[in-house]
Image (tube, rainbow, N blue to C red; front, side, top):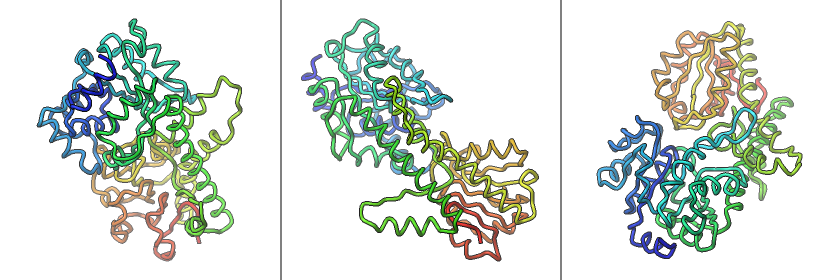
Length: 441
C-alpha cells in the first residue's frame, strides 16, 4: 500500500485504525475517530478496562463532558472494539501510539511501555501502514528508539511502513474539547507522510495542523510544558516573597496581568499530572550528551516540588495557633487528584503531602469526590479532625457549607492550597486560616 492509496482510504473512511493505549489520551482519540466513521481497534493491557470499554462504559472518572456518551454510542455501533491481542493489528492501516512515557527517580525517561508496543507491533505491521507516536517523548527519541525498534523485524522506514509524531495537547476535564479545538504539530518522516497525517487528523481536529519534521514536533511538546512549569514556579516563588514581606500574591497577580504582554500563572500547592512534572526532564534529557549545564528547568522543578512541604509548614503554623502540635494532629486532606474535577492522581502534590505527614506520625484522612477510594461524606470525615487542608479546587468544595465543616472539626483550622476560600481571610475571629501567597493576620 502506497501513501497515495492510504490517503484514498482515509478520505473514504475505509482505513482501519488502531490505538495502542486506551488511557486519558488514547481512549478519547479512539472514540473521536470512531465517531466520525472509522473502524477503530483499541489495544489495552488491563483486562478490567477492556471489559468496561467493550461494554460502552468509560473507565475515566471525573467530569469529562461528552466522553461517556460518545463511547457508548460508538461501541454500540460496532465502530470501536478493545482487546489485548496485538495480532488483531495485522490488518490495520494506521496505528496511533498513546502509551505512558514517565521518568524514573533520576529523571531518566522510562520507555518500557513505548518499547514494548514497538516490539509487539513491528512484526505485525501491514505493508504501507502509518505509525504515529502521540505520546510525549524526549527530543531524539524517534530516531534513537522508535525507528530502530520498528525496523527490528526487517521492515524499512518509508518502504514498508511510514512514521510520524503528532503530540497530543489535552488535560483531564477537557479531553474531547482539547483534542478537537487545539492545534497540533504534525511531524513526519517525509513531506508526503506529513500530508497523509494532516488528512487523517483533519477528521477530528478543527484547529490548525502545523506540518513539520518530527524533531520539531518532539521539541514543541516538551518545550511548551517546560514553559508552563517554569511560569508556575515563578508564580510560586512570588507567592513565597509575598508571604515573607506581607504582600498578597492574588492582588499582585491581578494587577501584574493588567500590564500588556504579562500573564502571571497561578501559584498553589504544587504541580502534578503526567505531563508538566516530567516533560521538562524529557526536554533536558534530550541534550544530556552535549555538555550543556541547564539551570532554569531543574530550578523550576525544585520550586514546584517543594510546594507540598510548604503547605505542611503552613499547617504546622495554623495548628500551633490553635494549640495543637502537628505530630499529634488528625488532619483532613481535601483532594487527592492532581487537577480539579478529575480522578487523575498521577504525581499529585497531595501524595507528597500525605506521605510527609504520615512520616511525621500525623493521622491523615483523605477525601476526594472523584477518586473512588477516597469518596465519601466529607463532613463525616471531618469529624474530630484538627484541621482541613484544601489541595484541589474541586467544584464541590467551592459550595461547601463552611459552618457545618467547622462544627465537625476540633479546631477551626483551614489551610487553603488553592485559594478556594479567600473570604475566610476576613473571618479571623471565626477561622484560623492559612494559604499560599499572603501573610496570616
